Length: 284
Image (cartoon, rainbow, N blue to C red; front, side, top):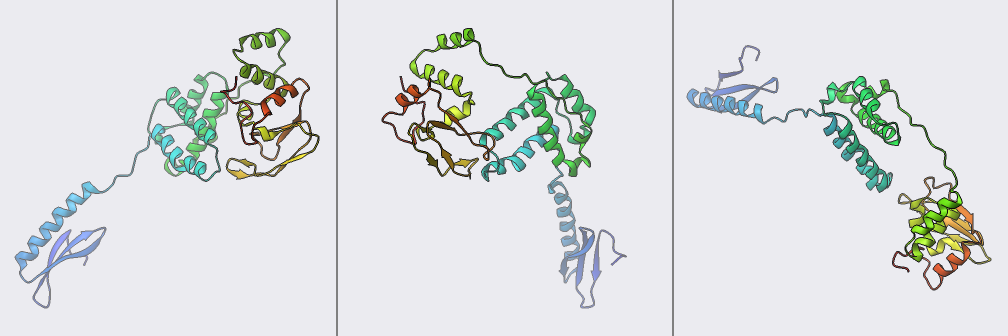
């Protein structure tokens, strides 16, 4: 009915009156009445309801840099933790980096974010690991925003790398200073464990009695997991320890027990179950 305006009344062949209204770009019959005045009243009500609905329609959300980071984290990262694809520590690291971004950058509309804006923020940061973390979080998050911004601006941003410092062995004076700070036997045992294994902190906290083989026969460790997924069994040779928690599940670390550590392990393992943690913080 191209001759109709936004709303109109049509007198039908059967004598009744039909009220039509343009809704969603098409003519829609909103009422049919025997009396023309009733059709007008129904049409008036429909027009008033149409105007109300204009204000009730959800508006397209306008994201800012900060609100998009929160949205990206909740929609694209957290579900991966629930599926076991990302560890809880990774998620916590993401949240820490997002908080860092909110301190370094100012919150602006997502469509107004430019490569120059990101580059300037990165340049203002202290050269270090946190700068790299910020770069990679922005790269992942803004890459997902391509449907909103029309392009991935991080393709134009240069990554800022920090200079890594090679590790070195502690000298005797430094070792003595650390030992002098120990307040109980547990702390002394932990210091010895660090000095003779070079393990990471998370490996120490995951160390269990069953990860230590003080016998003269090999032992197979089964039911091992990494990020909630099963990993291959480990054959633990005699006088060896297994360091659980390495970043690469296919590169599990086993190392021989140093003579200086054997008395420590014998004392800590005596009378304890295989599933117990090696370093019980209640142990004196």
